[in-house]
Length: 488
Ligand SMILES: C=CC1=C(C)c2cc3[nH]c(cc4nc(cc5[nH]c(cc1n2)c(C)c5CCC(=O)O)C(CCC(=O)O)=C4C)c(C)c3C=C
Ligand SMILES: [Fe+2]
Image (cartoon, rainbow, N blue to C red; front, top):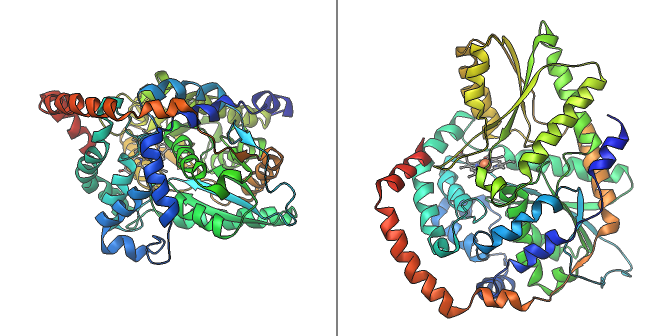
C-alpha cells in the first residue's frame, strides 16, 4: 500500500466531535456525582484496585464504582450530537476537546508524559461475571434508552446481567475461568513503554478499563498522583465505535471537566488508528503467515469477523464503526495484494446480544452458507480487537470452528490477535509521538445549554410518564420475549 492512500485517510482534527460531547453533559446530575468524585476520590481504603474488593462483595463494589460514574451521556437528544461523530472521528488524532485554554504546563521545567491505554476490561473470575455485566449494561452507550426511560438504566442492567450471567459464565469457564484482557493489556502497556523508550521518549503508560479493574477512574487518579504534565489517550480499539472508544472518552471527559488539575492538562486523544500503515502491515503479516500453514494457501477464504454493534448505532446515531471496518479491511486486502496475495475474502459480524437488529451479515450465518457453497478452507481473522479475549478464544475457536466444520469446511485456521507483536507496538509508539504536538488543555467552561437539559420540573414530568409507559411496556409479551434474547 502506498503512503499516499493512507495520507488520504488521515487529516486534521475535526473539532466538532469534542464540542458535541461537551454539550451532551447534563449539568445538574453531573455536578453532583463529579463533585463527590473529586472530593472523595479514591483514598487508600476505598481505592478499588485490589481484586479482593470485588470478590468479597461484588454488588457493593459495582455500587462503589457506580458512585463514580457520571450521568447518562447518550441517547435522546444526544443521538443527534453523536451523528457528528461519523465525520469527525474518522481521523486518527484529535485534540481533546475543541474548547481549549492555553496550557499552564506549557513552560513547565520538566515534562512528564503519560499514555493512557483504554480498554474494555473483563471478569477475572467467574464471580466477577455478573457485576462486570452489570457495569457493561449500565453504560448508556451500550444500552441506549430513550431520554424518557433513562431512569430504568440501572434496574435494567441488573435484570439483564443476572439473566445473562449463567451463559457468560459458561463462556469464561471454557477459557480458563476468566478474561485474559487485564494481563494482555498490562503486557501491551509495558511493551509500549519500552518501544517509546527506544525512541527516546520517556512515558508512564497507564491502563484504564471501562467495565472492570483497573477502572479508567483509577488510572486517572494515578495520573494525577504522578503529576503527569502531558497525556496521550490511546484506545486499544482500532476502529471507533460509540459503544467502545466513545463510551470511554465520555468517562474521561466527565472527570476532566470537573477537576482543576486535569482540566488544564494538555491531552491528545487518538480516536481511531485502523488506517495506520504499521497496523495494516502487522495484520497483513499475521494473515500471510497463517495462510502459509495451509496446504493450498491460494484457495483459502479470508474470513474477517468483527464484533457487531446494533444497526441503530450506525443508522440513527452515526457511529462510524461500520465504515471504518470496511475501510480497514480494504486496506489490509490492498496490502496483501501488493504482496501477491489475492485470496477471496469476506466480512461478517459476531457476538450479537439482545433483541435488536445488529450489523449484518452475521458470522454464524455466513459460515454455514459458505460451507454449504463448497468453500473448503477458511482463515478466520478477528478484526475489531487487538488482544485475545472471550470472543476469539471461545466464540471463534470453539463455537464458530465447530459450526464451520459441521457446514463442510475441512481446513480451519485462525489468525492470532496482535497482542505484543513488535511491529504493531512500534506503530502505536509512533502514533503516540505523532499525537504529542496536538495536546491541548481542556476548558472548564460549561455552556448554559447544558443546564437546560436537567431542569428539575422537566425531570419529574419525564419520570412520571416514563414510569407509566415502562410499566405498560414491561407487561407486553413482546418485551418479555425480548428479554429471553439476552439469555441465548
Ligand atoms: C470493538 C469491539 C467491541 C464492540 C464494538 C462491542 C460492542 C458491544 N458489546 C456488547 C456486549 C458484550 N460485550 C462483551 C464482551 C466483550 N466485548 C468486546 C468488544 C466490543 N464490544 C470484548 C473485547 C469483550 C470481551 C471481554 C473479555 O472479557 O474477554 C460481553 C460479555 C461477554 C458475553 O457475555 O458475551 C457482552 C455482554 C454490546 C451490547 C455492544 C454494543 C452495543
Ligand atoms: Fe462487546
